[in-house]
Amino acid sequence: MTFVARKLGFYVVALWAALTLNFLIPRLMPGNPVDQLVSKLAQKGQVTPATRHAIELLLGADSSSPLWQQYVDYLRQLAHGDLGVSVSYFPAPVTQVIGQTLPWTVGLIGLSTIISFVLGVGLGTLAGWRRGSWLDNLIPVTTMFQSVPYFWLALVLLYVFGSMWQVFPLNGGYDVYTTSPGWNAPFIGSVIYYGTLPALTIVLSSIGGWMLGMRNMMVSTLSEDFIVTAEAKGLRRGRIMRTYAARNAVLPSIAGFAISLGFVVGGSIVTEAVFSYPGVGSALLSAVNSSDYALMQGIFLVITLSVLGANLLVDLLYSVIDPRTRARG
Image 1 (cartoon, rainbow, N blue to C red):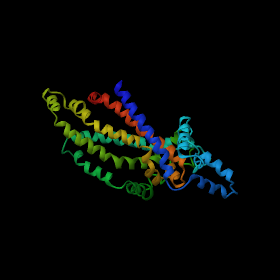
Image 2 (cartoon, rainbow, N blue to C red):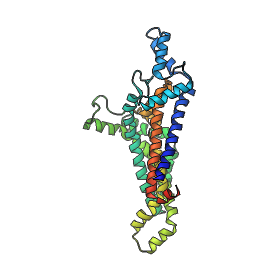
Image 3 (spheres, rainbow, N blue to C red):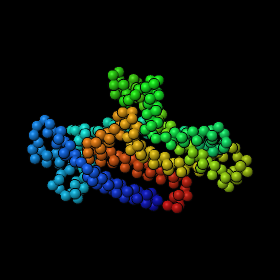
Image 4 (cartoon, one colour):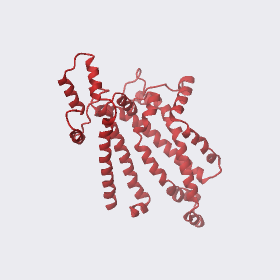
């Protein structure tokens, strides 16, 4: 119980620090969301000082209030679930923008990350168990894809499978002409079809790291004394590989997987930009270009909660898988 309380206390402090940085960083950036929105409204008519002040209050950027007061108001709004109004998607609230884009990102990036982790760890386990096999020799090829710039790999796959062979669509999240969003077979099939190529890019670019890390940990674990003892007892080789070797070798990969899963939301910008995918990454890019403080803070908040939540979950899971970490904690 003390271990869990200590972990929760650490993550509460980390959350407060992240929220504080989330408040400060957009305000230290050049540009002003109020000016952005005023310039848009000025095209339709004159904007009075009263209107400008109302916009400042609406966007949480009241220049008449000191910074500490804005910070207190920001925390109060968060406590009530109010993330403000988006400039780039005005007049939509930030919660609505995130609510519409987050499922696309989680579905694509999250599922692709899980697939690459499971495949990488599984193949890495077999490669480390059977050193010198064809699977072991395949690892340099997979790591080559990881070393290639991500956007370049995405553009190559897009050109080959989207333009030259026309197997997959070039952009978008679904066929807007023949399907309508909803829990129906045509829409779900269209989403899977449009997301296959972006998902393939993510898997190819990340599976090599999981394979290499797991393979090296398997090689190191197989030289431990408890593996020799298990072999001397005459245990089946499959049981030794799964129960003794892989279970201990996978611990560093689980920690890495938590970080990767936490950054699912933040790591989608390049993917969604190349494939014009309607996710959080595209919304974040639009927010940066429009100096949209509220939307940037909302997306950063989601990223922060994702990273902290994933790491807390794995910390607790780690203590179950390896009780020694709980004893040391």
